[in-house]
Length: 180
Image 1 (cartoon, helix red, strand yellow):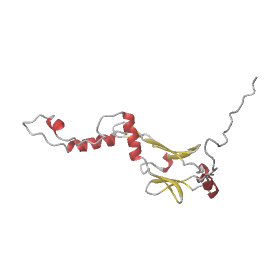
Image 2 (cartoon, rainbow, N blue to C red):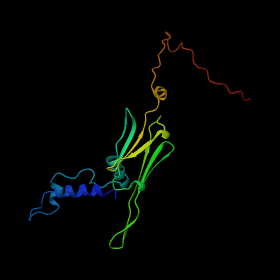
Image 3 (spheres, one colour):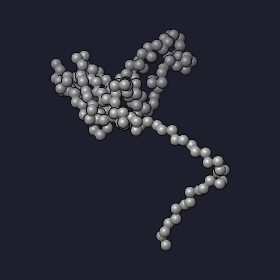
């Protein structure tokens, strides 16, 4: 199912290829015209394609003034088919529909599983989830307290000028082992 958008884009781009004249070879346009295919249509490692699709179709996770927030469109699932749970510092969202029998006697089901790792400093215990009437699931975690944010801030370390040349600076002597 992950490769469906890739194949649809490939079909769309192939439909834009120039039509072959009756006196030309069908391969003529492939070798003499500039390629119209995008990088997605070129053969590659399937893991690279899956990684690219995850990046393209991943829901936007935002860290704003109200905290960390992820929104997913789960309108094809009923509320009782969705679960949100936390494991360590990550959020796992799962949707699984019941199997349904169609008119031909076959069964169909669908499911998804998404995992998000919270940024450092965010408390999993304060996570909330809400489902809107149009089927958008929103996961949000408020910003960490100011004390924790101060601990994460950077600090500029002052440089002391000794006035001595590097040869005259007292060296740190090596540690001696007292095993004799």
